[in-house]
Image (cartoon, rainbow, N blue to C red; front, top):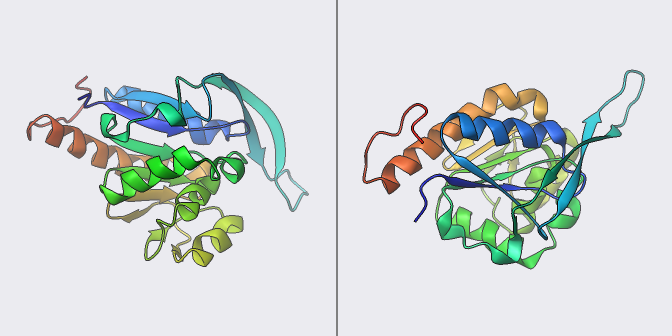
Length: 200
């Protein structure tokens, strides 16, 4: 069993900074980010920001990213944790039955989970936010609360195995808490040995 692989969930229109920051941050601590999507192909990420003078989010094309594995191929037991990126992708990804299966597994087995921005729409659709405290972008507060969760307007919210942030502006605030959980989980898989630092 691999003790370093971590799933990053994306689709077309995943937010670039939501996705790439954890993608590279994982590598710094010796984890292997595995990009997963509906199918193995190249996906177009986007940039999201409220432009000065605007009251809604404007979207630009960002970088592209290749998915290494499809949701249908995933055995969640092979992974240490999972990350739900934001952007518009979760709006359609949340209807994928294999992604719902995977999401429920990570919640039910209390493995390290992180979500940012619109990423909340996936665990909400999987009926796994009931009674949980989460941060998300304000426009997704309804999605969280209608599914039984509690919205918290903070840059980092830790609720057991679940870590969340509001938007990519919180990247430097919430990712560290998730990394700590991943390192602890990796240590358990290695028989309780310390896994601090950049140990591959």
